[in-house]
Image (cartoon, rainbow, N blue to C red):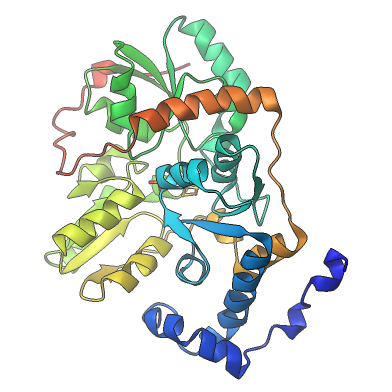
Length: 363
Ligand code: 13P
Ligand code: SF4
């Protein structure tokens, strides 16, 4: 039978009594964030994706910013960028569908080149990844000879290939310090770089890349959360501007924020980050009140259940990389994986320790 003949037409995706029965447990679990009236729209896709994952020997990996019907409904594994990279390096599934943005799918392909890695929408990019090219990194190396390049994973394979080591927000300080040098070039997130600089004696040369979602938060907004919601705990992602981090009670990767909620069980919390995070975490912690400022990542939101189903049916869009670029990028990623996850468990007094003289913007 041809692949085309096996595809269920979208019109055949109905909310049948069987689908309702098969997904009832899940519907009950997520009802606080997906109203029962919406469930019949998602359930047929959840059921069909489950079936196609079995046929393709596929797993769906979802970033913490995916919507709850993806995160709770079809993902085999969810996490922050580091966890997704670690999982991608270890899985024995034949096919990986990356429900996240393009650099995450590239990272999975670099670490598992023999596997088929699919991204449901090729336009799921990232403003940080778009802020720098491999040629930029080569110019920086000329300008700062001998200074190692530490690159945030939110970059293209081409940029990773020009780098000495990668990092994520879950290990950036440890990665910088692992090199044992007095100065590094840190690319491309200026704010994450400033956050790192506040926690280490290593001097950082920064690039002016920003996350288009996190750069919009302001310190005044955080003060408004506190004024309007007494006792609230403020958790922020290190891609936020320094003045926002200065107002936060806790700074960490998406996974660290989730862990922090689980450990400290605040009565009220605001996660200063992409807004699907709160929906996903609220399912696990019904006793915690989440204040949810809406900050959508337009790239993450390109991934939907119908596109995930299509990716599995049509086996597209495949991530393909040339072997030379992929091999060089892999070295930088493997060096990062050897450092592992190393985030502070306590609040860092990094603002007080910020050392502007140890920070420089590359020009
Ligand atoms: P994490 O690695 O903390 O999940 O962050 C990835 C990201 O894109 C944040 O905007
Ligand atoms: Fe990139 Fe920001 Fe979206 Fe994360 S939230 S994928 S850093 S644009």
